[in-house]
Length: 476
Image 1 (cartoon, one colour):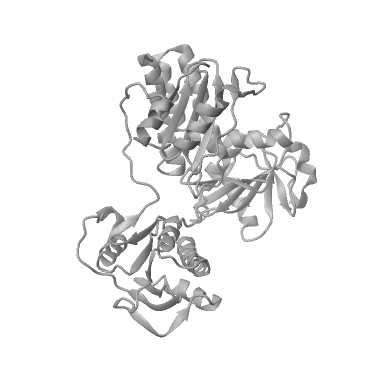
Image 2 (image 1 turned 30 degrees about the vertical axis):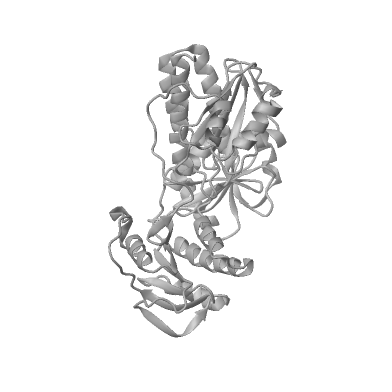
């Protein structure tokens, strides 16, 4: 029987981890597989059933191969031996063997719109360290602190990932400090200039590589704006708005305006109005918006639509064409920050909808017609699209129907009208794009979701089951 303090440790780490990852990536679950000593047994802490469906692979790894006993030493961190990540579909994992708990492996969801899994792995690594540390100190006060740290770990996770990647190339002897860099980026992103949000690129170059930049203009040594002068930098950013030039910084100050290829492993901040991206080499590390860092690519997530199309048994070429056209319409609505609704009709005949009908439908496989359709999407009302032939028959259409149980007043008229209309018309799928970016795919009067909603759990559970019993319960 494991003691109550251990269960509280796991519960606090798990609660902080799920809350923090939910802020960073959207609703996120977490699970832990652990063993207190080398002889086992292996236990599973999975209150939200994140690991269900992965029983065969976990049985092979833990109960047959025993890989968790063969972790490798990770210098200079002598208190930990890190295991290889587990390649479980749809999950991010990190774990190893630690001083106060022989083995732990944390898991969380790999969302389809993640820029990179790197920051999330750093998050899980820190959860491992905090759990081992708390078990060593056995302090109730430390448990609360660990939970709070994991809830607000986004900037630290991004920083750790950037440092890890740069250390592999530039080496640990670097003078580019990442924390001040990330703080400056968030401050600039929140600063308007004449009522406009920032646009343009700001690149942070290793000081020893600063002379490798091809400069269009440089500032005098004693006139270079310091990175703490946010308002000044925001004004300078206007000089690289709408072109391929970049403001160049050595992490301490703005050196000048450069162009062309930049030194390897420089950190690039792309400002795109209300949001932006952090990039390192060819990797998009994360996005930033609303004063914080997030894992989202900020691109349309149409996984649910693709799954609905697969159920219709369409051939792959037709599915590709539909996804390409819908993706273009949705992306345009997001970029222009207006809402829209797309009625994808696969019935014969098409559903009768009141609106502005076209004498000759637009062929959305043609670039010019698709471009016109993106403009028509700005008009109030929905686009009525013949999905089988990919043609736009009407715009500014009105969706109506009887009230349904799944209506949500907080989602607005466009969303609820789509629920009502699809409840009365089995032959349509409606894609709703809200002006504040969320995308909903609605069919048969319900919103299609990648996963069921889960309710956060705040109280401690009883002792987690062993992995063997957990697998047996799943089979039975």
